[in-house]
Amino acid sequence: MKLRHALSACLLALLAGCSNSGGDEGDVGICLHSFEDEVLHIDQASGATTDAVIGEVLLSQFVVNDHAVPADDLVVSRHTNVTVEGDKLRCVVPCSFGLVEGDWQFVAEATGYAPTAQSVSAAYATFVGGCPSYDTDGTHVEILLDESGG
Image (cartoon, rainbow, N blue to C red; front, side):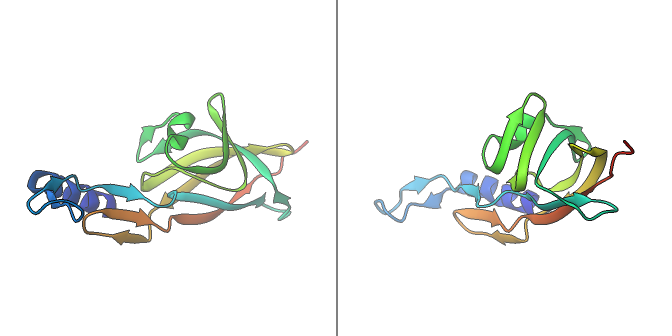
């Protein structure tokens, strides 16, 4: 919802223009919105029953707000401790990525753990409006992986 408000505000600002504080009186510039943080932060990964800390996970099969999203699209703008490996993201925990708020589903896997479905509601905690505007303070989560039977 915050993103929708930010985009609406920027659209109105683009239509009306913003005063250029560094230029001549009457100059009009573009009002920009930026993301000062990733929307999803994985702070810890651990075993569901053993609580063993997992230092590195592979993430795949991303669905954001009911739309499949290729892994490499999630790291175009901002990311930390994430690399793209084919259609997966390798996350060295802690890691962060993505800009789109909403309902996220993905699969996490690691050596000795079964691929485990994850579901996260990710949002920015802080929106600063005006011209320019920005979002910051993304969602921080811990993910749990099921231990493999073998």
